[in-house]
Image 1 (cartoon, rainbow, N blue to C red):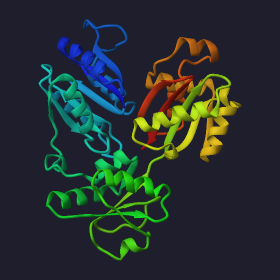
Image 2: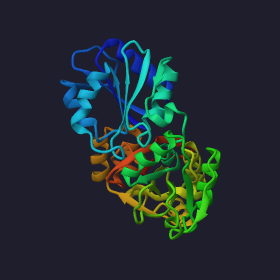
Image 3: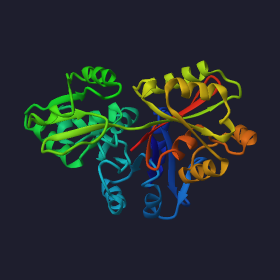
Image 4: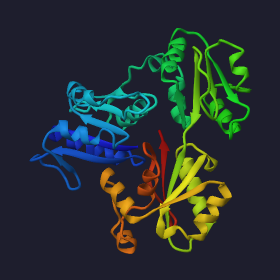
Length: 353
């Protein structure tokens, strides 16, 4: 996840630094009020209201080291949908409690809260009904599977059914690509899914979670889980073999619990548009490639405030290839894996919301 961290006290800054060191799989930008003492690399703001307004749509998660009331007032004007809003967590300035405030399941706030609490030695506070009853919620599992739950109205229906102690049915479309992968993932969570066709789903009125390629007709108690597109942004040395790039991409996918076959598209810089190893890999995976010019990548870097490599910038004119390219490829994305270095290759993975 790409996380924006807001601190309103000196102790909050110290806690933020501790969190960053303990969570290497996420990337963090720290926002501190002008005039307050802080280390290098932080972003300064004059008003917290303006800083949150600027960051709300640009980050996957907002972390406040503050009173929960402050955070709620700051995010309230920007709330849109549980399927699109970023994860929001609050840590009190003494570091005693880490609280999941918004987008606990789809946005990953509950999981991030658990991670933050473990690093800070805080008590995680999670209030979603399914979690406090230790129930596996469909929208929470959708996030782990790399799928999008629709329609939104049925998320509450299915979760409510589970909280009442009733069972729901899980089913996988017989025509769904990588169906076996999804079945195996569900089995790991103790869920057995029946394989059925899209037509059969309407022969029953039972509350059902249906994994399928696209959203079909609606009925009460039917929740579709649709595969999200996974964009792989890739940067590499000139002349690197397709085998080495594939190895890096496989490792990157494994880090987020996915198989390389889940990759929908490969993005990079126009400088790599003739890179044989990259093109060969895309061909073997059966996915398309998209290449962006420096102007586009620079705009993305500036918009998301992405870190840059001075060495890479001297070579091709911009200092971030993989993450900037992947984010440029989607209108609305959530970072699954920020820029990660492998042998002669860098990879970033972005889910399209």
